[in-house]
Amino acid sequence: MAGVNKRKRGRKPKSDPPSTPDIPTSTSAHIDDVVFSVSNVELIDPPPSSTSHRPRRGRPRKTPLLPENSKLSNPKNGKTLKVTSPTRRLIDKPNGIAALISSDTTITNAAARVVPAMDAVVKVFCVHTEPNYSLPWQRKRQYSSSSSGFVIKGRRVLTNAHSVEHYTQVKLKKRGSDTKYVATVLAIGTECDIALLTVDDDEFWEGVSPVEFGDLPALQDAVTVVGYPIGGDTISVTSGVVSRIEILSYVHGSTELLGLQIDAAINSGNSGGPAFNDKGNCVGIAFQSLKHEDVENIGYVIPTPVITHFIKDYEKNGAYTGFPILGVEWQKMENPDLRLSMGMKLDQKGVRIRRIDPTAPESMMLMPSDVILSFDGVDIANDGTVPFRHGERIGFSYLVSQKYSGDSAAVKVLRRNSEILNFIIKLATQMRLIPAHNKGRPPSYYIIAGFVFTTVSVPYLRSEYGKDYEYEAPVKLLDKLLHEFRQSPDEQIVVVSQVLVADINIGYEEIVNTQVLAFNGERVKNLKSLASMVEKCNDEFLKFDLEYQQMVVLQTKTAKSATSDILTTHCIPSAMSEDLRT
Image 1 (cartoon, rainbow, N blue to C red):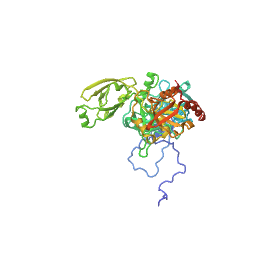
Image 2: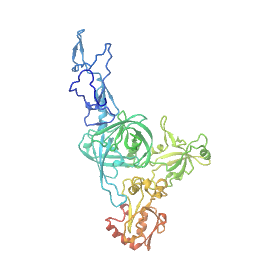
Image 3: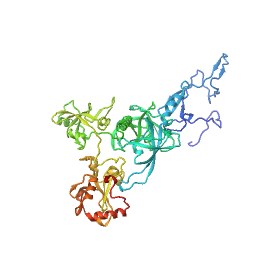
Image 4: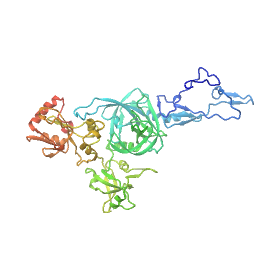
């Protein structure tokens, strides 16, 4: 009958069974501050030896425990036997937890190798004060966050850029310590989502060994993510394998760089923590995960090539300069008729240039409909990939991202008349017409007669329309975000963000997030040029030509005199941001 426990035959169990140490068996474990103890070892006993006699029923007979190296006499032959401890060996597991299996191998070496890597992982505490892009003259309420980081050579600490974005104060705490040390932010790489910190206090660096970097792992290689995620205060370890290596979309920087996909759990707070291989070397930084109802345990790691690029860029230039890109949009050439129409031979492969960024150095050499055959001597396939490793291919943008800003690269192209041309192109970073981030700078604004003018960026769109801004924002702004290039290096999209209601702007109150095209007949190039034209205007009227053929007309003298009262009413300290005054 279900729910009824039948009494089993055999010997009646004792009321107080002997206690056994708790031994972790899962691949995820929280490691406390003890260097090495029974709680983080896995005991694996050898299988029992087979005997010729029939096994006895019931509970196995207990063997009395004897001290190691004690002697026991054999009643059959009278010889003395030496008793030693059970044979066990020590196996190093990928997550830094050791398994004891042999007495010949001591735990000292394993602990000495594992513990320094774990001790180099620190907890990052940050207080953030984000700008208010909808009210650009003020900031939002400050908030705090915690994440992970780790010590590298040169008395420096690596973590994620989003962990210290808009920071007011950053503190670090070592494993097993109760002291928080104030840190200095040396560089923030928004595109690659990496930040570099240091601590001036010498006490912080005592007893800490820097993490060593390893090579790019292969598929199915074991990785261990160490950090301080939510769910506890102590250090946490999760293990998995490398599932995929390809060009990934970096959410924070809105860029595409090389990345690793792993199946180890990466939760909030793991950001900035190292991912170790089975040799104890760091092979990446945990930075984002995929949350969807149809997927499980998909995490992403910034690999060592991207980390090394960031560090060398800082050491070379004294600041982070970014990852260069090839300022073109290209099309795959997989269709045979398309290749034939472009004059390509059967043995030629490449990608067709659709558009070129007018501000990029490539615009002086390359042309639309050119076919890029190779980059730096590496042939490009019709799908835009290049050989990566044995049995693997990757997008050719990986070759570009390996360069530094200002480096040169050899590009071979095919023109429409079947002419093959070779160019040496100087690579540079690119800023889109609507930038993905403001690199920590506060937003710019200008106010006249209650009209709040500002520039459009992705943080601004997110502030105005929420995280679903790609669906909620005006179509024309989204089109410029996705497809439009800048025509000059300082071009910006200037909009009327809102109208602070006053008597002078009656009838204009409903104008919101509408682009300003011209002022008094002159094209608006950026916000600084607009502010300069308005301030220097001596005409009778201020005329603003807006998107959708709208027009705003104000009397010059009345508008300028009314601005001061409007600023006082809304407690706004200045009519323009600091960057527009210089």
